[in-house]
Image (cartoon, rainbow, N blue to C red; front, side, top):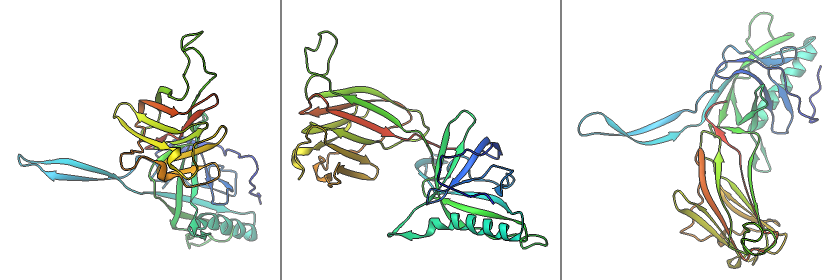
Amino acid sequence: MPIITTAAPVTPPAIEIPEVGYAAITYVDPTGRRWPMTDLAGDWYTLAEGVSGLGAAPYVLTSDQHPRGGERLRHVQPQARTIVWPVLVKGADHTAFIRNWRRLGEAFTRTLRLVGGVRTPGTLEVARPDGSVRRISVYYQGGWDGRGQTATGITWDSAVVTLWCEDPYWVDAVPVTVHRETGTQGDFLVPFPTVSSGQVLGATTVMNPGSIDVWPTWQITGPADAITFTREDTGESFTLDMTATSHGELLAGETVTVSTDPPRVRSGTNENLIDGLNWPEAVLWSLPPGETPVTFQLDGAEAGSAVDLVFNPRYETA
């Protein structure tokens, strides 16, 4: 029987999957163990017939009656996704089969356990032949039952698992990072245009290659007194004033991380600094698909001051 370890990830062979096409799929349980789902030579693999829920996210549309007839769309609400996942499990003999059946079943149901007061989802990972990988977080909902037919449950059986996804969108495994750093101060035009101390650190266009809005994470490296992030196309912005926090100004080498979803501000030593945001004017804005002009401004910046914007593109489909 194969032994599952947390060693270097091994991508299983690709097969044809409904709504996905030619891809290799792996399930990663809450402990980090990887379970290949498309290796037809293994002791468990996906039964492609019957797979569903890997396409576009489900939506609920809210509309209003129009006085001249028909309706007008008022609101679109993405819904949680349900994935149906048929799996065949086998073994060289009954003992090996039961061992595989129990372990894989526990790998799915483990997503419902509370560990330290928190439930950790599993991950369904879809790898394409071009090297791209998309992931979605899943919780076990039901279906780990055998067929209950003659000859099943001895050396093989199959289950039709239902997986529930609170976030219906697929996430790129590779993050997009934008880095801006203040260099040595000098004349703006000699010998090349140079960022001056403590003001506009980066005016740039950020490209979101996904099909869904993303809420980025920002890491600021000091020195800095206050940091303003502006989305130029909408004028939305937020400012983190370090001098208004218990931490005080950000010194050289110190970091603070701003998460836009959920809203969270933490220092490098895990201090809660969210009171430093300029509420109620602050808007922790998202990045839509395509190009977005943004500006990072640091007050009190010196050589070494930096801003890193990080996000994982999100997609409708696998």
